[in-house]
Length: 330
Image 1: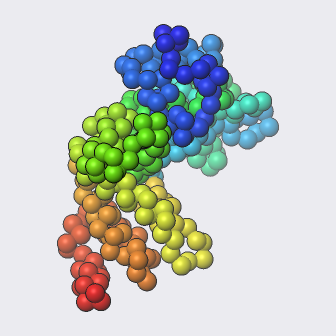
Image 2: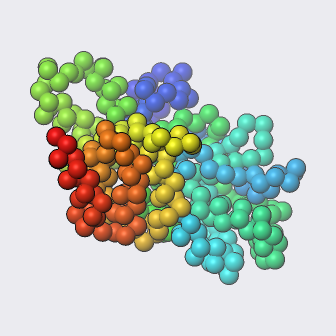
Image 3: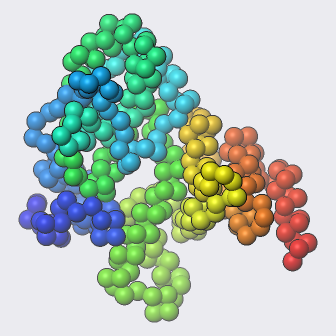
């Protein structure tokens, strides 16, 4: 199986999004079972690891890598904390998959992100020591963890982040932020394939060119978008939101503000996936309307109206006023 990899062995640990934007580009098209076997052989440390919660120097020992930074929110942590306080940390199926940190006791978790967030909150406020089963974990650590080598590439880690989170009922559904972020990875993968085949819009026609972009999106994220138009709306939202920086002291882009809003204000545990497309199309309409005006600071407020109040954009008086002003100025 390893001998059939479409890459030189020297590339196994190269972490270059342009070269290997996904495991499909790295290992070729295979079944999910084959991906897991290959990744286990190449990147897992041979022995099971115990996840220490606190280092010898008294500092907290585990956190999230960038690949697992987009899941969970405050509303999903509240019931999880209640469950942990009542029942303890259930580890019948083993501990989480973790990423080693060079020359350190610390580890990064590829799933269990919300559980770890709750544990660190309880450790900081002193409540962890009041529960015997949690106090025991402070000294023994969480047993039965599979540990990935520190230089495991990010595309490989993302595969196991997605796989590990399937078992976490509080954050099983892919969040809108994750969907939007995935467009950037699709575009990198398409750009690599476009260069290899020397595709151009003029050589293929726009429809065929976009069809090949959507083929890459469907390979990397099966059934995430039903059609190219849905993918392109998400891609445009991500691109414009990253480019727009309202005139405010902190200088954060609209994208960074959207991420903060979702993490701190949106109840992702009760955010039905059927609502996602409405959010994307509303964000698309808002950004297209305001990106070249003097009112980019209103973008976040309009998105907050759609997401938090769960109302269609057509009911937003401010949006209708902005549309009227835009049409009158033409």
